[in-house]
Image (cartoon, rainbow over all chains, first blue to last red):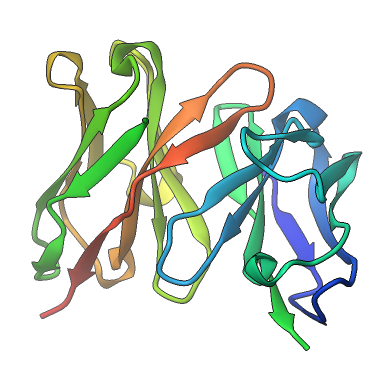
Length: 109
Length: 120
């Protein structure tokens, strides 16, 4: 099973700042099979990025994804008030086995 | 508009059973793989099970194999999760999600979740 590790656990930033979130896999992940989600309190997760770098429908272009192999990054170029939330990465492996990272909380500094 | 609406959660004793349902609308249900994902309140996400379009392929996380069964009824646009031999560690919000298996294997739509509490 591929284990995903996310860092930092919490990111404290101000609106307008840039957020850089990391997702590291225990073994190589196909870039096509790496996704990012946003979750706000009391809500279901929302797909942001699929295929490591493609934005899902309706996602603003301040969200971008990059990376390959074992290291992936979600970048929020300028934080808006509605972006303060928890972010999860997810991989789809063989078998199939789907795993999520533990999440990074982006909160207001 | 794609909608996924879960139901069937509640309080159940350890060792008991529960059946969750997910009503789908706004898309051609029979064309998609579907999944269940759970989340312990305040914790992270855990994939539980997948099922293919016709119900002939089913996959489970190891911790629920032999206890949970995923199924679907395409005529009713519904997804189900039959849970038995429930344990305290199965307590979670259970989400129904649509799984996209094209480029980028991810969950593109989610329901609002239904809470399952396993406790005596």
